[in-house]
Length: 76
Image (cartoon, rainbow, N blue to C red; front, top):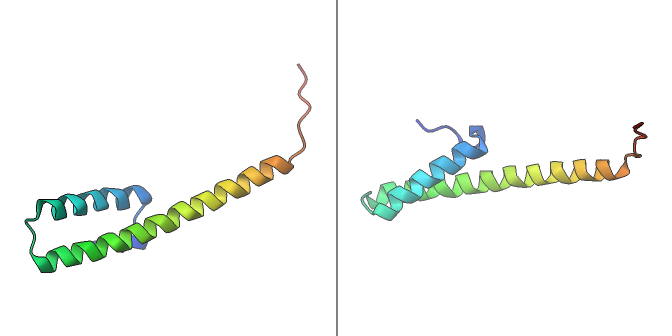
């Protein structure tokens, strides 16, 4: 049984998406299976986009925090 998309890491989602695309490109799956795989792929893409957006927000916050820090006096 496949893991829920929200339980997969970003890398796991990408690997599964690559597998789905390969299977669909080969055209050797039944229509029902192709639709199921396509639906799973859409869920994986949405979850991956969400994870990327969260990472981008974290980076933006960290960059904003960096800009507000006072420079350190470093003795040489």
